[in-house]
Length: 182
Picture 1 (cartoon, one colour):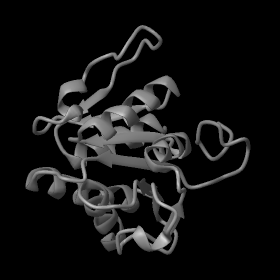
Picture 2: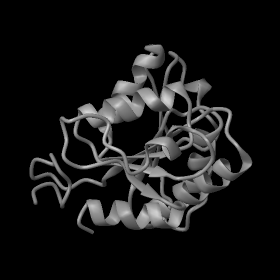
Picture 3: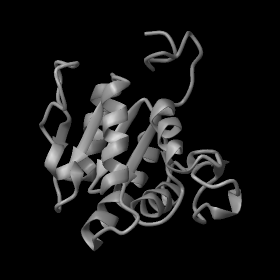
Picture 4: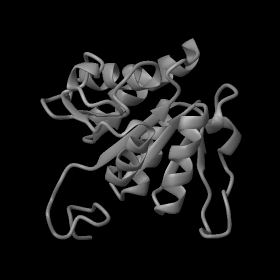
């Protein structure tokens, strides 16, 4: 496939981007899984992108930054505000949008795969956008957030596939590898 196995790569080899989405106010379990997810994704060779703030976003960024495979530019934060200073301390590349929640569109559009960890209304909007953009969606089946509710489900009839449900971060990384043919 052109783009080094990356859908839409257009013949240019690039590191795939995995968006990790989830609540700013998350459970201890969700935060631990998000951190393990960020670490596992970077060690598998991916770039991790989040909304750049706290909660699941910070935990995934922290895990990614602490990965053995980390190098500069592997942790991206797409921020709702206009200041890069708003990013959590583990973000390497801060993208201040000044767009508020509309930044969710950018985060989803730049991702090759979207992985949801728990989440509230913001996460739900990102999952819906990923579905409409035909992005593969992986959802951790933990807690009571949207990732657990939508794991294994089809959002509507526009796609034949479903949101892929996984039990933990390690399984999520394996599924992402499979989805991208790695």
